[in-house]
Length: 299
Image (cartoon, rainbow, N blue to C red; front, side):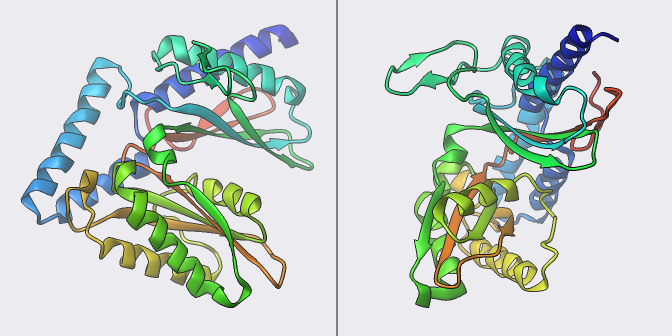
């Protein structure tokens, strides 16, 4: 296969996958929402969960986006240094975003900052947003696709704590964010927490956290314990589905961290709404692929 054909084929595949994510929730999110629906005892909350399920069924049957806000497209790449189309990936993902916008169809959400002009293609200056990790001695690429809607983006916040605040300060910051703005993000939420040195590194890690599966646990036992405690504590708030009260406020809490300066703790929160539209696909060197997040995807 020549390079031009390979680029066209991969662009088409990723356009179809990006479009699919707007219509179908990842398998783990669907399963988690089903678990919360079964456990719920509040009558109104059970009805809201049922409307969520019916909404997803309708999106499936009608082949339409499951939420009118299909967000700004973000791609997170773990790209092998030896992947044959590494240099073409940015062009491919630009084309995939424009293609998915037509296929979805996806709402036009890319507005040029300061110009206040909608591009009409969901592409624009640095959009789709690309977050790169280059993996040595690897010839495949794993791509996480995320639709950053307005509601789920609204609670996003990052800060650097005073040295004496410690990990109690991290927990307090998370609670402050979710209690003040979490209801605007269409609960139950998947909460991503980044802990690092500075605001920008913590923010990046918090977004990486919500790309993990809902029931994933941090490999560090202390971080995993904090995930559990934050999940339990946030559920005690009783926000319930769509903020109308219920047993659960969150689907879970995922923490990602890095080593940090001894004098500072940067902390950030990102949230995914109940319609948490993200997907993961692995592309091999021969351009065969494996969809990791969605069962039943047909390319």
